[in-house]
Image (cartoon, rainbow, N blue to C red; front, top):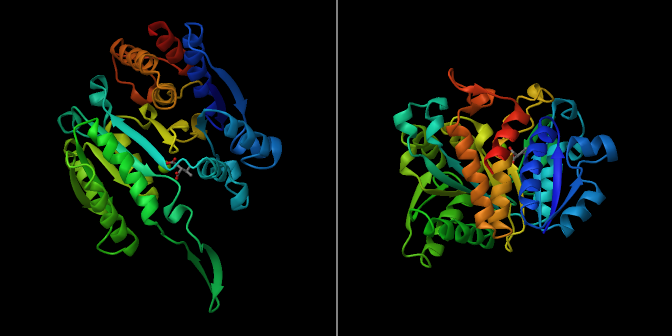
Length: 353
Ligand code: IPM
Ligand code: MG
């Protein structure tokens, strides 16, 4: 098992350090893997002049999986678009064909009060957002900003082929089959042809999964229902842009975006694993960031790419115990709990592995 370690920018190096400690602990316990560091994002721009340098391309092409901290920072926002850290992330997703982005939003009972919603609304929350990750308006052509009739016009293209829709729909139906067998497909078919096709293809794909109850929801309504009654959802499937937005929204239901891992998979379960939060430049280097989303991303990697369910479960149980023991980073802190920094949170997880 060869794993590329991409620390990235901002809080990335701090949180990745904790995930690596957890992986090393499992290694000394008998799991065999090689961890190889690489540069992606702003740190790669600084060191190599581009966000996704050739050496990193080679590294991730050869690795079985990659784990990423986060990329980006205000310093880089002034660079031409192709040199921005985010292009490194989009580049790695596209190059590796990581079309299936799984973003679980699970509420740990200990954190019910950390949510901004009432505890009774979020109790028992367990949603899996399946976001298509290599298509849609993110990658559609034509795109640009140009002069038309003397004024600047900005444009992007929302585009999906039926093959792209059906392969992500299959991923979502298969995931639903292993859970509560409910799938909600999110689109905007009342306005956008592209998502009319989305709905048509999802309905066609459903014929292969009679045991899964399929529903459809317009994206504006889905955004509203997520805060009104999130318990109605089991698996949600949607396109790249809607999934970007809805997954941030869903993460807050669980108390902190600092808790949520993600997996981005190709059709052979090779994957890139990353917390869904960003690089949080405002708290970088202060040892206060929550490393749990990254540690839980390592667990997802062991489960999805390496089929090491027992090891994944050990990490997840350790995280649950740490929360039950009262350890909290500042983003999930409540009075009466033990406030810890990034490294201390890592220590607590290791103690429970
Ligand atoms: C995410 C992020 C990225 C995205 C950015 C950093 C390019 O918001 O992974 O959700 O929009 O996909
Ligand atoms: Mg996002």
